[in-house]
Amino acid sequence: MKNLIGLLVSLLLGVLIILTLASSPSFPEFGSVDINDRVAGEYLDNDNVEEVGSGNIVTAIVVGYRGFDTLGEVTVLFISALGIALIFSDKKQKRLDLKFKPNFMLKTGSRIVFGIILITSLYIIFHGHLTPGGGFPGGVMIASAILLLYLADDKFRSNIKGFKVLEGVAGSLFVIIGLLGLVIGTYFLENFIPVGSLGELLSAGIIPIIYMLIGLKVGSEISGIVDNFLTEGESA
Amino acid sequence: MTLFDVITSVIGVLLLVLAFLAINSKSLIKSVLFLSSLSMLAVVSFVIMRAPDVAITEAVIGSGLVTALFVFTLLAAERRETK
View (cartoon, rainbow over the protein chains, first blue to last red):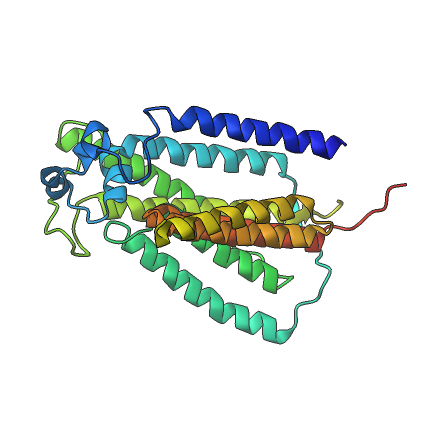
């Protein structure tokens, strides 16, 4: 009976939402949006794309036009990682016990796969301004490679202090590059390096540099979170 | 009805079914696997809607990291019976 009422309420809500949005002008049909009416129209303008120099337009928006928002995003991630570290902070001595004992094949195989995942993530980060992807997914991929090592070896601990240093350095460099734009140019995070030709690996000025820093920062942060989750104090 | 419409409708219905299964399945590990496949299908729908950046992020976070963390936690957690 309870389930039936729940089903009815959710169906009713769904129909209501669909009916409301179907007639709303802010939700046109998929594919029939006139891009020039939107804010995105200006970003997609050919002259502007040449100026930013990033082949991937999403990266041009995330790091180029809206770089300051990305700084806020990275800060949010930093604060959440800090919160998790505060909650779980204890004298981390040993790994959480797993229910199974990893064998030799698993350990060795996971190290090989670890290298492949790491190379893929670095590729995604370095080509963030040309192909889909970039700093955030690449960083999470680094963290998932670290998680794989944790999964496959019950004695494994990554170098958390090194990660913390890397995270701090990458975050500070992001702000310093932004401030350099303010010093050399006119505004925060200005693209002060020549953009080069569109579509080459070394192009788009500071965008690949910033995405690299974001990738390192996100990767080390989430690796820290993973380590926090999978260790416990001696007495616990 | 074009091929595009057919594919998007099939994926939409499958997404709903998988979400329902993820909520309602009895064993937790099956729930996690259904959630993972839901993310994977969401990736397909993102690619169809021409948003490859979102698709990559969803693939890495939704069906990679989150699934691995859930499975890991389930492996470490103990079942404790309540009365």
